[in-house]
Length: 188
Image 1 (tube, one colour):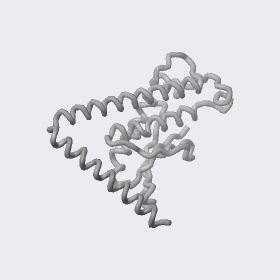
Image 2 (cartoon, rainbow, N blue to C red):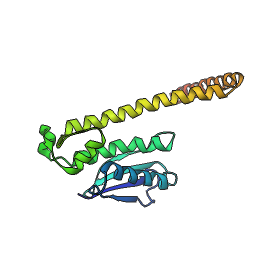
Image 3 (cartoon, rainbow, N blue to C red):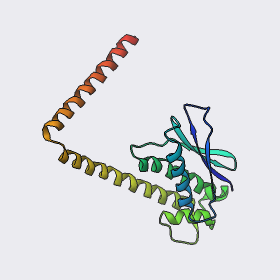
Image 4 (cartoon, helix red, strand yellow):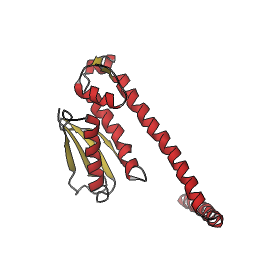
């Protein structure tokens, strides 16, 4: 099975897609996938306006994901779970997918073990649900890390500046609402 992860620009089709061939037979499959994603985002996400990461399996695009997030790590995570799930699902036969039968496929097991599976075979439902559970845990941890960072920010900035920032935020919100209302009335 030939797997390529590539980055394209949704805004500028003249940019050549940058590709990373992924060899899932060597090392840990999740690490190989993650390294390809990381390399593409590091090297291309600034130059590629509206970057999109695509998964190509056997020369066919099977899925595409737009990196989202404020930090580099968030951008990688936002696409990595989806790419991994597509590659994982491609390791199951139609019969195994349809009837949730277990497989002994080494790559599927390698991916599943990275997400907590302990066994000699794996079904698609167990593998996908484990992957989603880890993704959900990462999102919850991110939510609380942001709350902790906000508390740190508020402890570092003097109260009068925080109040001025909040007032400016409210004014920007009111201005945006007024502009939107004006556009709606002018459009009629």
